[in-house]
Length: 286
Image 1: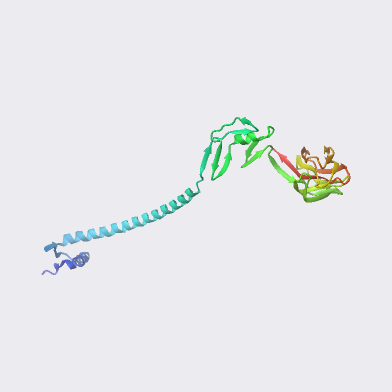
Image 2 (image 1 turned 90 degrees about the horizontal axis):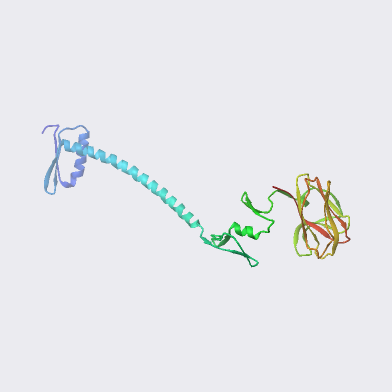
C-alpha cells in the first residue's frame, strides 16, 4: 500500500468517529484518503474529494451554527424586551379610567337653562364632572369663569396677596389681635382685630405694594356691638361703616387702597362693643 494512501474500513458504529478522523487527516494534508463504511448492509466508499467536501460542509455548518446561535440570542433578547414592554403596557391598561358620558340639562329654581347638553356630563372612575356651560350658568351675572395656569378663576384673577394682620404693625391703640374667634353668626375666623372701646385703632405697613383690600366686619360672639368701623390710609378715609350691632350680618368689603403706604383700621364710636375686622387680605389683580 502506498504510504500516501490510507484505507479505512469500519462498521456503522464507528462511522462518525472515522469520518472525523478522516477529516482531520485531510486537514493535516494527507492525500488519497478513502473510507469504506457499511450502512444498512451496503459498503459505501468515501474518497478524498468526498471527504474534503464533507470537511468543507462541516466547516460551513459550524459557521452557520454560530450565526444561528447569535440570531437565537438576539431573538431571545428581543423577546425579553417585548415581554417587558407588554408588561408595562398591561399595567398602563389597568390604569385606563372608565368614562361614561351623559347628555344632561340644567334647571335653576324651576328655570330651565339653555346649554349644550351633548356630553355635558361625564363620569370618570365614579367621579362626576360637568361642562363649562354648567359653571357659567351657576355663577352670578356679575361673575365669570376663566382658566389660567391650571387654575379656574371665578371673577378676578389675583396676582399677589398678603394677609394684612401678618404684616408689620406700625401703631396700635387698645386694639387686640385674636385667633380662632367666632362672630355672632357662628362663623369662626382664623385671625381678627377686635375693638372694645371708641378711638381704638391699629396700623399696618402696606409698603405701597397693593391696590386692593378685602376684609370682613362683624361682632364678636356674645357681644352687643354698636360701634362704627373706619378704614383709612395716608391718602385719607377709604371706608366708613354704618353702626354695627350683634344682629348686623357680617359685612364683606373689597375696596381700593391705591398702593397705600399704610392701612389704619379704627373704631369711631362704641363702648364695650367688641366689633372686629377679620380675613383682611391685601392683593393685586389683573
